[in-house]
Image (cartoon, rainbow, N blue to C red; front, side, top):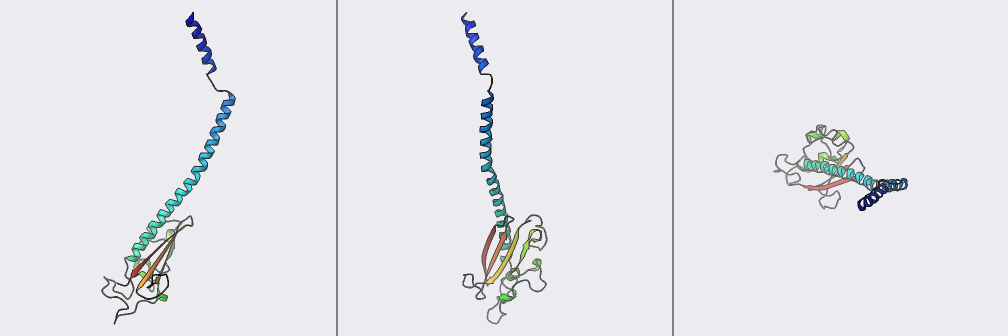
Length: 190
């Protein structure tokens, strides 16, 4: 008899615990909806920041590769283009290029740039950004980016256009988001 009483109570207890009420379901759905909206509010801005970081990295890569390309060139058109044994503005040699003549020499294209100041006023964007050989091998890779270069004499290292022994090279890369990454370096006449 004892076992039948226990068995009857166990069955009654199980019947009460077999489901959720409508009120419990509605409260659960509301809590779940609120938690999803809070989580979404935190995740969406993170994904935008993640995209900005990718743009910054690509802009830095583009700027650094262009900086390396420019620094590998000769200091000046009047300098020795094959090792630097002859430097412009030395006694008995040709004067360095005047700053108003900076930029490509004649019909020179990017593939034939041979000295630092040839890059002055270089302005390329999107699919027109060229590789080191002057080709469009970078087409599509930097879509939406813009790169600009300015070259000026700066013997005093303060940003003023002075002297003729040191050139300051400024590179500005603008990402598709509008954010700019700037690079600056110096190339000396040696």
